[in-house]
Length: 421
Image (tube, rainbow, N blue to C red; front, side):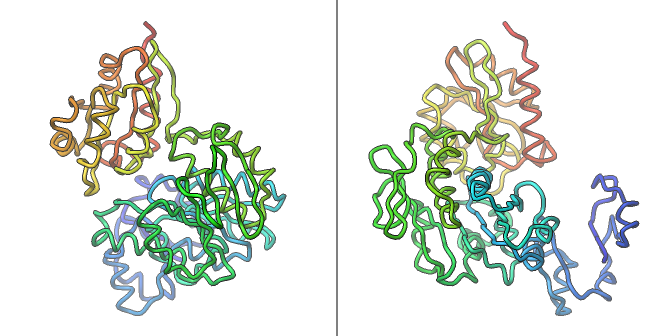
């Protein structure tokens, strides 16, 4: 086995000795095409674009290329549950994992959240359940991947710097269902127009989820209560006001998680307790602290326009909004109307500052900050008693930070460093 990366061992934080001790060869800092001479299979990380020279050369030579998600699937005999969507998939996956644990079966939660499934899947027993968050990048390199339950939350503009337009990106999401049959389940949030438009192309048995419409079959809201009507059984699961996750987007996440878990045998009564007790994950509308009557919220995971749209609608109080970073081809003008209604002032950071300024011009006042620390200090000065200071960037983090987690943690450090009045 040969492991290769264009970065050095130091840049990767890699302990080369441990890899070599396990019999692996390393090729770091460069990727000569000679690496392919003895290759029978290429396993690619989701972050590597398909146009990478080594991958293109491998394809030309007829060498099979799969992703680590596909590798994990082929190594496992467990039941697979896979969740995707532009937004909400991490929270939904984590919640689904907690719901599935009520069955008493062994459960692994992984994929785009936590550990790579290729590392853990073979250790999960055949009677276990693997709950995997899967990204479009991971789905691009699947072949036989066939989850017993696949869930699709939404499809909105994202990663347009990597795909040839929205339709290409949407097609990647739909690969989740490519190998399903009527024996499998496809949980679809049908209030999302792009999901609904593609529902007929799904071969699995569809379990629809809707917040707005009472469904003849599926999961929906009626009279302020989440109702499950799957098959001939109807059950009132939990009142919306009792859900542990706040905000309209989290109502969707909770309902999709329940529908997904119910498809592998989770009972509504056991699910209700989990749905009431589950709380937000780090970097996703995460409460940081309250200072001088101002609430500080870390939503660093909001790396696209649609996720910020959800965030801005989650608070009744005026918002001082910290936004910006490395933009991915999105249209920030889609946030103008919401900014006018909800934002007192926007403090902008990173490479996307000028594009944000143009998009918000005339809708809300903006200021620039050179660093996140400076943005936090300025936001405190701008915020009034009862306001929310919200980090919700709508951008990737890589212009200033290692990743969205690094950005979120630096935000929390900056907020916690603010002196009490």
